[in-house]
Image 1 (spheres, one colour):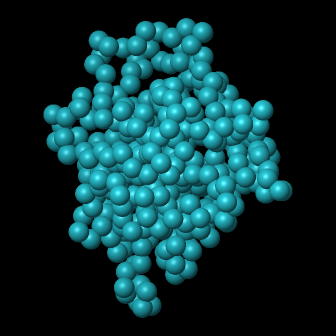
Image 2 (spheres, one colour):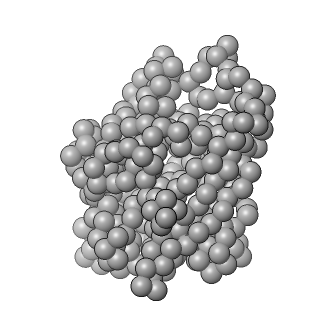
Image 3 (cartoon, rainbow, N blue to C red):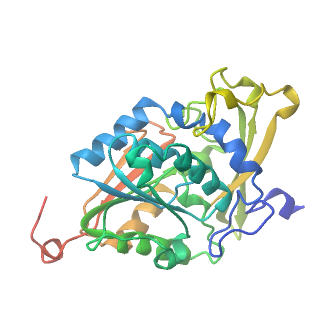
Length: 317
């Protein structure tokens, strides 16, 4: 009974190292309706990330949580060079499809997409620039998919170290997570959501699993009704004539995803433990400086890889 409730992956096997909760293909397909499609990313989301990347002189980005390509596409359309990877081949099929459909656009023709996972990122067929990437992004609450069954964050530390190794000196990691403090303290996720702009979300129900008194896993049950999608909804990469039929009530989908609930302080300590206590680190809550939003739905961390000058105590910024 417990396994049926707290399933850490959909049926199927993905790339070794990270549970692929989208491996049966169903969740990957429904996810498009949950996020509202690539074209419905909120303007505040787009402006926040693109402005910060531009302000920090970022040109070449490694997206380590590509999924169906939602963030990578946004960045390609805003003149960034993007290399993308993900552990779920079912999710990547959507990204590969989009790249093919838009291959005549120079940015998409140069878009590199490789299958890989965070725990062995160096083994993925990624063409890393000589000095490293300007930025690594891990967005969409993706990092929380990595479980902590040992209880010591071993996998999380290894993944963060691998992200850091992909950065050039002075490069920056963007990584986000839900407000798990609020979820654990109140038993439900904050209602506001600046990430996704979908008409199809019916409800999100929350369950918390404790192991020996420790907050071990959060499970979110999503109910998505594709029939509520706007009439002009099409998945990126489809020709207009290939619009999907109007979904019916019987198409309502329910799927379950499980997450490792790291509190804000724990996540901050995790990053500092890998990048160094002296590393420059900034945190935003729902795209505002930390503390300005009372109960944000998401936190975004920016942490910079130190240069030799930084390590020697010379401030570069």
